[in-house]
Length: 239
Image (cartoon, rainbow, N blue to C red; front, side):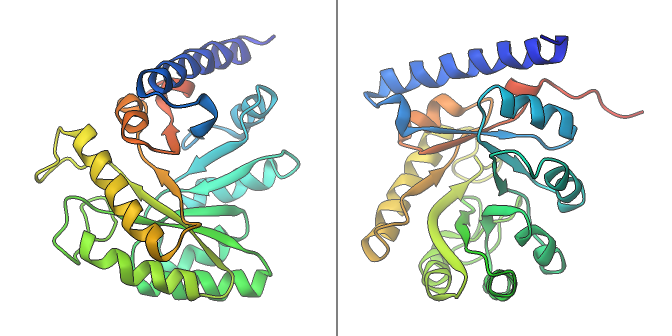
C-alpha cells in the first residue's frame, strides 16, 4: 500500500467512526447517511485511490478543475456532485459529468441545466441550495436562495425536462441568526425539507455538514455529509 493510500485509508476510517458514532447518538442507522468526499484541489490520483477504498460519491466546486479530473476518472464507478456556485456558461461542461448539482439557487440556472440535460440526454439530480443568511428571496454570501424562494425553485426544477428534484442543501452560514449555530441551522433545513416533501415526496435528500460539523448535521437528520479536509488533509497554501 502506498503512503498516500495508507493515509487516505486511515483518514476515511476516522471519518467513518465519526459518522457511525453520530448516527448511534442520534438513534439512526449508519446506512441512512451517505459520505460525499469533496476532492476539490486534489489530483485525479487521489480520486482513484478513494475509489479503490470504496468511496462512491465525490464532489467538486470548480468546473475548470472538475471537468479534466472527471474525464481522467471516467472509468470509475463514481457519482460526481457539483457543489460550488455555478455560472450558466459552465453548465454544459458540468452536465457532462455531474450526476447531481447541489447548488441550484436561481431560475436562470434551472433553465440552463434543463436545456443542457436534454441536449446530453441525461437526467441530472438537483438540490436547492438554501441560504440561511439571506433575506426572504435574496442570495446568500456563499450562494443559495433565501427561504422564501425555495418553493418556487423546487416547482421549477420538478417541472423541468431532464432534471430531477432530489432535495435541499445548505452550508452553515457565517453571518446572520444562525452564525455559529450549526445544529440550529441544520434543524431549520430539515424543517424546510419536510415542507418541500409535502409537494415533492421523492425530494428527500438533505445535504448538510462538512469536516467540522458533520456530527451536528447527522443529529439534525442530514442524509448526506460533504467531507473534504478530514479525508484528504489540509492542502498547503500556494506561495
